[in-house]
Length: 218
Image 1 (cartoon, rainbow, N blue to C red):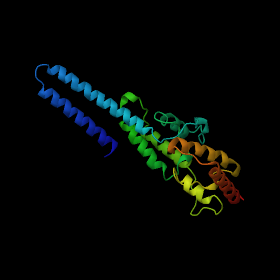
Image 2: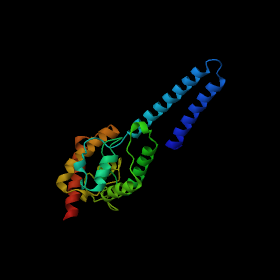
Image 3: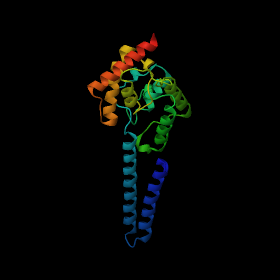
Image 4: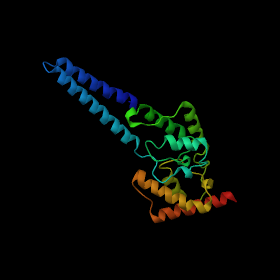
């Protein structure tokens, strides 16, 4: 059942219960009706609160600022910062590949469209959604080609980094930058998955990416 269908079903059941209480009431029906309405309001509020909590689960961790976004002064970057931070931390385009972003963004839009007005969630227009989607796709994670370069650490890199997203191309970053990127990803793993890499695993992955990046950029 879709989130919207689930919400409608819950509210329909609450409304039916409230209607039944009102119809079956004897003297004091007005009080029963008020009680039923209060129950309906409470159920709706609880459902919305649970919905917001679910929407925030396993989403971008803290640490990215608007100035860190690719081309931060562009319209796309400004719209991402404006609309994507009402429910969770600011995402950065390289978190997902160009093939992953459309599905993720559409899922976010569906959530935004059904959140109760009392949460004051800003909803982008159709034109703004087009700009956001194109910005994320244009600056998405650069995915590795058909085959990863051979070398020590290859298997650890493939197994670890594919847990949360498609495998990045080693040339996505210059060799000296990979140590900072892997450390940041390790922090994301702790936030999202509740686990981190060991020192040896980090060392193997960083060395593999540094060598693969350097060899491709020659």
